[in-house]
Amino acid sequence: MGVFGYIGKKNAVPILIEGIKQLGFQGFDSTGLAVFEEGRLWVAKSTGKLTELENKVNARTFNSTVGIGHTRWATHGRPCDENAHPHIDCRGDFAVVHNGIIENYLELKEWLLAEGHIFRSETDTEVLPHLIEHYYDGDMDTTVRKILQKVEGSYALIALSCKEPDMLVAARKSNSLVVCQGEEGCYLASNFSAIPEHTKNTYVLEDEEIAILTDNGVNFTDFQGEAKDKILYEVNWDASVVEKDGYDHFMLKEIYEQPKALRDTLGGRLTEEKVVLREVALTPEQIASFNKVAIVACGTAYHAGLIGRTLIERWAKIPVEIDIASEFRYRSPLIDEHTLTVVLSQSGETADTLAALREAKRLGARVVAITNVVGSSVSREAHDVIYTWAGPEIAIASTKAYTTQIEAMILLALFLAQAKGTISQEWIREIITELKKLPDKASEIFKQVSKIQQIASSIKDSACTFFVGRGLDWSVAQEGSLKLKETSYIHAEAYAAGELKHGTIALVTECTPIIALATQRDLYDKTLSNVNELKAREAQVIGITFEGNESFGQAVDEVFYLPETINELAPILTVIPLQLLAYYVSLARGNDVDRPRNLVKSVTVE
Ligand code: F6R
Image (cartoon, rainbow, N blue to C red; front, side, top):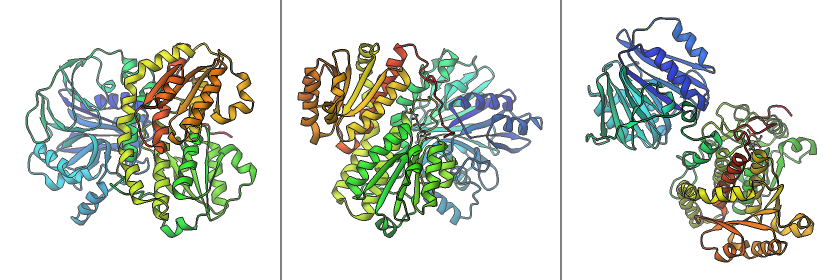
């Protein structure tokens, strides 16, 4: 989750501990550090609170002036001391801290094991120190460049060696890393917040760049070894903003992290023509034996499950039931060994979801969990786990967990359809191509944030709003309305657009903003006619649709156009303006955006 490094004139250990503490504001499950001490590397790791690590290092005195540190949020391998960073090679000569995901680590690990290397953890990161050990040629800089040729994936990494303890080598691809130069030494961190306050001379590492730090300063090269000239920034940030990476709130930061979270969740799970879910150990025969899928979750996770229901039925042709977890147990569900149960939970600790999982297992069902927290109760008790690699979600209102849960549901639906042969190879290829484009399309939405701010200010004083749509748009409308009500405290309801006229339309006046979603091309005309009914009651209608749907754009009062994608993937894009809308309305009303009243992040009681 966070990497940190120091080389200079001062005692490295207290600096590393402070850096780790600052990185820890982003959430972590374990921490660790490595320093060069008395001719060798000294490594300490601990799971849980930082005080555990402090107790370990406080038990002795250090003279080290170089070291690396880490805060981990588990992805590959549960949270435990062995899986905490830094990771070392067989002899303990090289230590590495790493943020990101090494996508081809399984192949690399198999090869290194065959070469006689001994692994101590379940992580993807551990391949890095072993690769360095294998290729070390007396020069850390060229060795790190060499091993990066073998590695696929994303990383911000820092390597330390007892063979060249006068330097730190760092590299970046798709994960942030800054280098700061101070009077007393040089610092490296994945997040500027970890850098001591007085050190403001900062370089930002770009993709495929390497930094070599010594106590005399820092040099930069590209992956080919060509020297790079870097701009030196003088950073003067308010520390509380820095904690949130420059964003005013965690909710906004997490909304903007979605392109990365989406990319990471797809990482290593797609070839050009196939979904690869190594973590779901179901054979095609087992999949063929399921006559039903039962989806169970709460709140936002339930809304992601709604999308999963449509996609599993549409692609894998298996009937799906979906339940709110607190209702599931008490309606005596008809579940048995032919039911595939899918539970979704960001935290993996929601009491009702956990109870539903246990009930499904008791009834003999196979349980697949979709969760964001490695080692959580849900992940430990399910038969199979698909992790969403969204990173810690700190704001109470869930954003990046939702979009990555939908992505995980898409992967599962395709995986089941592939095994059953219910979907053509051509269609799978097209979906995969579009899936890979989604993170960039999600980024494009942020260019129109001023439009959302303007819509937010037009609805901020409303007493009641409706979110409407058909098909998958109705599922997203339910999440949009939850986001608005929980952050802004404005009454918001979601309706299937065709259902309004069966009663609810009586509530609609010119004071009722309606957010109408229209991304399902086969339902464009139907949704348009529902919008026309609402316009006839003088409602203010805000439309969200794909670029090119001009007739819809003209029918509504305000329109927000989304980059085009296929119908089934639309929910991931559609919800982003709704999340931003909730954020800006809440801000305009002066609410505590990250901690709305009466809510907690994880509901661990029934
Ligand atoms: C809303 C929200 C909640 C959670 C729900 C389930 O923004 O965050 O509705 O989605 O409490 O939590 P998890 O996913 O942790 O089981």
